[in-house]
Image 1 (tube, rainbow, N blue to C red):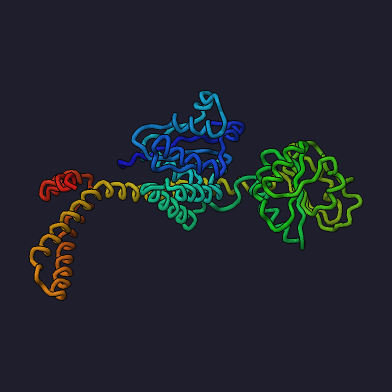
Image 2: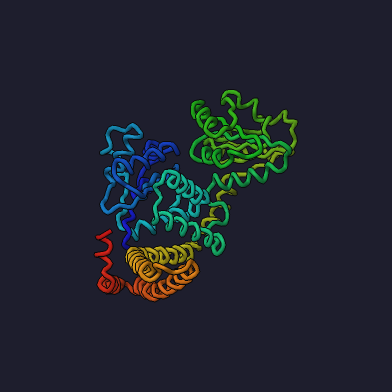
Length: 419
């Protein structure tokens, strides 16, 4: 592949969450940066993927612009000392490796939760922003559409996306199922650590009510505002438990919630989900009529089975990626000869037009129409064989020889210079 596709990546694999939070970009900053890359660095093709687990810049350029990209990114985020952040980034400058990496990211092989369903939509969004800002050129268009086609095959042909493979995602699925038992379900998430925050994000946008509470009120307010969810003051928690139908706790305080909290319950059916170690919900609550308890072991058993199923599908997913990459490589090889094809077309068209002008000076309109149609047909047939031969030579890897022959035969290089 003779493309100059590259990537500079910061991800959960080499950067802690504190660093990822500092580097993360919203849609407005992404759009601004794409334009900065074009105006300051001269990148015609670039795309930015920024999620909670990664911030990555994919671009097309002959030279490595990693340092310049990180500098612009840091400036946009108001970070002065970029030197301490550089070690957290990884650059892939080999086009084939960078392209393969994009496939692996988009299809979920590089995700923290293997087979992550969200990442492909995040890639589509990144592509849309690049297209809107005119930084998605021919190679970017081609590889992203091939990625989306490969993703469709993964869904149709493998078990790689089956099941819930993270505790928060599995809990969100369980919550949705439990919520169907109520007309207007009220869900309360207690504790906004990593699992609680992820769960809140999974449940944002649901039709039922979701409320958040946390020991640190600032975290509750920030996340509730970001996700448009309700807030419950932690100090009022004891009085709020009975007002909710589904209560999910991830606070690692043993028996934080117990039977005493539901002694006066009149709401009937109630579901409790304990995601904590040590357990924050006393198992004795299940002795209360109408109360059902799910614990972390039950959730993790479900996720473990899903993870194993997805891992078993990895070789099939990698085979799909390799097939897709071969399509990209074949397209890339054909793009190498497209300028020669276009020059040949232009040269034949000039010859055709010149001959028509020479021989149709006093011809009727009907004769001109006939001659134009006939000559077009002839030049198209003349073009067909060299085009087919060039494309076949591309696949064999020896197109250069045929390009040289055509350039000599039709003086294509001279024709191009004269224009």
